[in-house]
Image 1 (cartoon, one colour):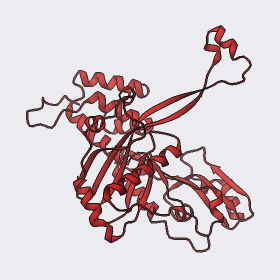
Image 2 (tube, one colour; image 1 turned 45 degrees about the vertical axis):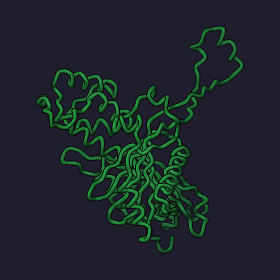
Image 3 (tube, one colour; image 1 turned 60 degrees about the vertical axis):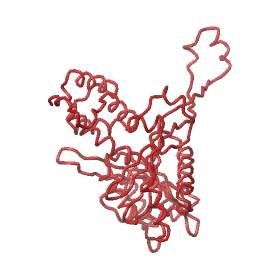
Image 4 (tube, helix red, strand yellow; image 1 turned 90 degrees about the vertical axis):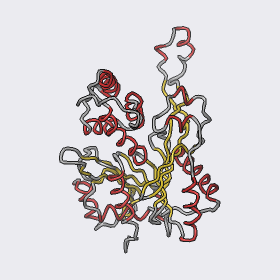
Amino acid sequence: MNASATPGPTSAPAIDGAKLLRSLVERTDWPVASNILRYHGLRLGRGAKGTIFKLREMIANGAIGQADLRRLFVRYKENLAYGDKYVRFYDIGDASWPQIKAYADSARAEVGPFSASFPYMLTESELSNIAPNNPVLSAVERSPLGITLYYCSNRVHFVREKINTYEMEERISEAFKKYDEVIGVKVSKKQAVDVIWIPNDGGPIEIRVDANACPIVETSMAAHEILRINFNEAVGLNVLNKAVNLFPAIQNIYINDEDCRVTEMAFMAGTGSHKHETMRKSQTCLRKERFHEAGVGALEGDIRAHLITVFWEYEINSDFSSYPELKIQGHFRLIDHTEPELHDALIRRSWGAADYGMVTFRLLSNLAPNDGT
């Protein structure tokens, strides 16, 4: 790779390589981030920190130029919108669309630290002065396919960690001798990038909550509710009031989608027992595992699933593939409901719009109830 020419006065703003690399690695799982970097011809160092250090040196000495960074920037921006999200889908009645589109056409980013930094992530110290868990409309993107609203926030949650008392001073360590375990609670702050997608074709509106910003599902669901309420207030109508029921897709994907590989499944057997099975070999499909295959065969398929995790291989080009993952998780008590409802799906490890779109297509194509299940 060669350094690009110095931008002229009419050129696009220069890409801040250091911020781009930090943001990509901070908000993306390393296996995905490292593959994206390799796909764009960038050499890796030892782990995430080593790679950032190595690439920053290459930027400084001109081995990586603006053309290289701009290609990576486009991929990073796409991943912001589609990578690692808790998703809900909302079908909207025809009568509501004019008011939704009027709001979307007039929506503007709120001036502040998030919009000033977007699409780069703020550091933890920069987040310390921002009120927690308050999503702010930080960017609006319009395309022929629809409108993407980006909401950034300082997502705060509490992390419990075991404290090793042996590393303390002796007089302090003595005070904890009567305890078997000492737990510390710290505040974790991370920038979240949530998205509301409004398609131009009248399809479902999607709320995508950042799954990387916080591992606690309840915190992510609370963020979803704030976004939903704020959007309805901005539109002036209660348009996002009934999310699409995803529960039927659990059983249907297991039965019908032969292209995916099942890595986790929980179900009730016809005998009344409850099973929760996980594949440790990530490339092997649970449906082909001998114990599972024999058990389901003995039951003649009489199982009712309430949780499933699957992934697909999506070919980026002849040398690279992504492996987007879908998880739909319901409690086993839902199985006994006459019409079980489940609205959330977790979509992880997608690179961008194409592989994310493939997953949502498979998901929404498997919502019709299966006869006899």
